[in-house]
Amino acid sequence: MLDWLIIGGGVHGTYLSSILASRLGAGADRIRVLDPDDEPLARWYRCAHNTGMEFLRSPDVHCLGDHPFALHEFAREKRGRALARFTGPYRNQPSLELFRAHVDSIVQERSLGGMRLRGWARRLTRSRRAVRVETDDGTLDARRVVLAIGSTRSAWPWWAVELRAAGARVGHIFDRDFCRASLAPWTRAVVVGGGISAAQTALALASRGHGAVTLLTRHELREQNFDAHPCWFGGCLGAFARLFDPGLRRALIRRERNRGTVPPAIARELRRHVDEGRVEVRLAAVRRAQRLGAGLARLDLGDAGTLEVDLVVLATGFDPARPGGDWLDRAVDELPLSSASCGYPLVDGSLHWGHGIHVMGPLAELEIGPAARNIIGARLAAERLMAVA
Image (cartoon, rainbow, N blue to C red):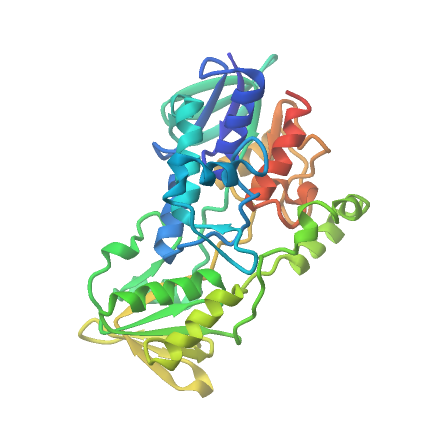
């Protein structure tokens, strides 16, 4: 029987496995990470590359090292010095290349790759002494199961679903089968969305020079350095804890997460591309979409006119519903597991959801707060979990 089974091998699950290995001296005989990809953070990296991300939005102290300055120290060492590029108003936002090199060094040093089991969770049940997880490749028992599941269901507008069904070229940057680098040439592409991912994707497509690129957004660019105010990384959490009503906590999270925002540096870069005629920005929403002949699609933008394109790229984020899907929905009903009206777990201070079951990442939002999904959210959640390790 395992001591810990972590479901999800992205930022949160990988960080927790690293901290458990470091502080408990435990290896693959006691800790396993169940994930559909072979490598840690594989899906996170795919999403980052699809947007053309060059630098993280998070500062370097939000890293996967043992302490906040681990990435900074790595950048000063010989093995990280050549990759030590930073941006942002305080020159502390690391390049994706540097961040990945640091993560790779941790994975190698702690033998985290040997802890990974490739597969999907299919059912969650309890036995007398353990939590049982049925996977597509067998059954696993563990004293503690941590659900470190990220949002996996991308948000598709209704018109885009219909347009794809009609045979038009439509893809979402966060879908597993989308690869920006492999896109066939286009004449006119449209990127739909108004946040950092949409802006970066439009810039990345424009850099290929295949054809015209339009960013279609419902609103003017809204500039914010981070997607949550830095006080939610620590200082404001006491006030959050004093909100006992889950509905009030959910309302605060919705208000404080800066969804649909763009850091000032990317906003400046986008405006430069607009001035140079490399990207067009249209402020409108799609009212109706129609597939035309010759691979074209027409988007009806209401009073803003129409737009004819041969490639639609969605950067519309993730479905806000609770992550996990059918198997977790079934566990919530069968075990049962307590949830708020929004569907997200009601957990205690140790992120305990039910006997032997803990959460982190999006599933921990109602306890960790607006930054739960971020890298700093992984650090905050892991500290809670280590208190019961």
